[in-house]
Length: 355
Ligand code: WQD
Image (cartoon, rainbow, N blue to C red):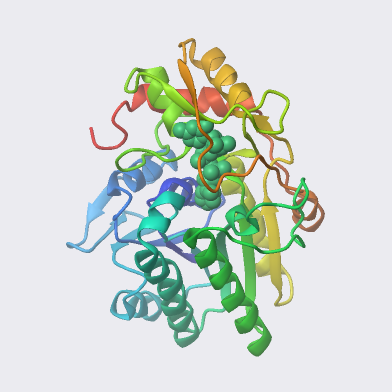
């Protein structure tokens, strides 16, 4: 099994992927600045992976007793935080989740998004090169497709981001093309997520957005819990069956398993640049999602139709064929499972990890 560095490993997708990687037998070093996540998520990951309780090894670092999960508080933009991780032990591969991901925030604060998402990735790649590690799984996003010409969207679709968040993902993807061209010994996977949602079925880890969520799934969850009175539905005049936006929602555990499959492929095959959509290939409208969540939770979800949100597309659905062909991976969890697992997390953690 491999020794892996996970940047942003305490975040929503990072924590679920850490669990899947630990259960696959890997050893993990996590670097997270906890700017949009909590150490508690990793303590719970250790519990779910049946690892010994975390022991404190000093302010910026703690580990499980068997050292299979070691956590450092630090920033991917700081070589002084990165370099020691490669010097202390052999790192066979890096999964890079650390980054900012809210579209509206990126429009308000483009400089911060370019700094964290792009400068952070440049710094990480420099530390990897200096540390002798050339295997990387990069957390990319379907946002870089912008307004798709056709759906389902294949990897060959034009890259036309329409917001700074998408621009930063496209910029890092281009950086990885350049690195792969100049250093053919690198093994790189660029994984383009569609809409990650839900939570681990235990309800013990899940999505815990700081402040007011921008994505629909945590908002629906909070309306079902009674933390919000109503869900604003952005537009009911879209060119879809019921007039509401259609998206490709992917269970976060399917996404986590997709990362494990991509890592296994990189470690097993010759150096390459792999680019894959991670989605279900199925679209569901906002109203379909609301109905599914109401059925799963047994709670009413009051809605109010409002104007379309600037920058939204009508439909975004993945063509997931390449991931199936290249690594035998497809989503396995249904929309009903997505809603049941999301509700289990919300019910057990009404205030997320804070409580
Ligand atoms: C989904 C649908 C909205 C909120 C974004 C990023 C993408 C990825 C996932 C990181 C749309 C509708 C939403 C609300 C609503 N993140 N909606 N009321 O915009 O598809 O994708 O998050 O990688 O990169 O772009 O996700 O959850 O915001 O919206 O009606 O209060 O729900 O119009 O149709 P989106 P979303």
